[in-house]
Image (cartoon, rainbow, N blue to C red; front, side, top):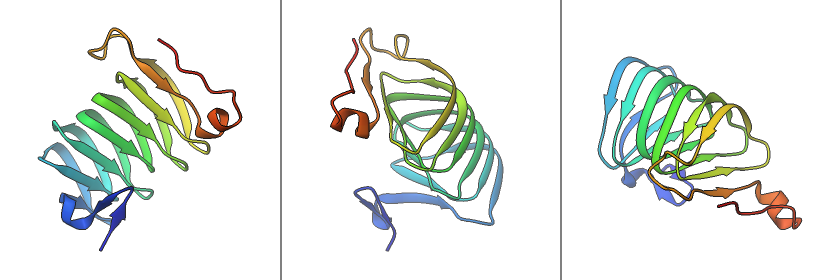
Length: 138
C-alpha cells in the first residue's frame, strides 16, 4: 500500500509509475500520482501528486497540486499548491494558497491575487514559522 501524506493507494484513481512516459493531455477524477515522466497538459478538479521521481513539463490546472519531484511550466490550482521538501520547481504558480517546505527549490513567478481569491494566504516555510519568522500576508 502506498502512503502519500495522509492518502493511501485506495484514494488514488490513477498512477504513472517510474519508467512510464505520457506525452499529451491527462484528465482524471479524485487523485492522480505521477512518478514517471509527463509532458503536455494536466486538467482536473481534484488532486495531482508529483512524487519524488516524477518529472512533469506541463500546463497544470487542478484543484490541489502537491509536488515532491521536478516540475516546469505553469501550475494553476484552485485551492493550493504545495512544494514539498526535495521538490524542484521552475514554473509560474497561480493559486490562492502556497506552501513551500524547507528543502524545496522554486524559481519562477507566483500569482496569488488572480487565483480566484482577492486575498491569498501565503504559508511560508514551516521552519521559519517555527522560528517565529514566518508571516501570513493578505
